Length: 238
Image (cartoon, rainbow, N blue to C red):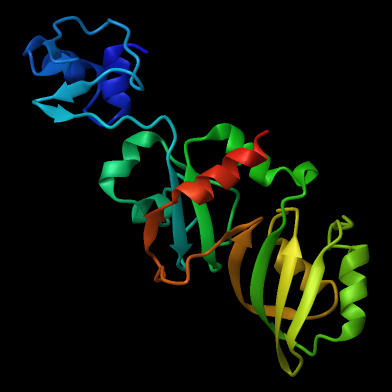
């Protein structure tokens, strides 16, 4: 990889700014001052330093967010706040994107990454990676609805959903449920309950495959994924 590209990707500025660092003899590779920005280096085998501080290069970054309501699962919007507004400035140069969508008023687990292949794997219905939600429902959810969701329900546009797994936690005028789906159609969970004449009052995503929302993560907070979580996600790409 070119040195200027690596330093720019690692957050040291634009290519132009990085070239200035190199020109000013502020960059070294394997303890040798570098004056050319176009040299190729191996960040896994060579020591790169800027002003005697080691550069920790990461090709991919994975961030878990406990998404609050009133934020869009998008990278930019003219009118509303997006989930990227919750990401510290030091991570923004990675060109992060949310994995899939959570509705504006939906809370819970959202993964942000610059790993485009993983983003595709996690959001592709063909991969059958189930996303699990906790919801409060206006209406009495009953055992008969479990089989109905397993077979797939017809949405308002005529689309029949793939199999979904419904777990009833509380059956009352305000029911509480867990629902696992492998798709991500627009407002899908809400529309599935609309199809059985019920209304979602509260919705929170709790897991994606075996990746679960950290219970110690307060709403609106982020953390980097740990090594075991990253290993699991990488295994999905194989």
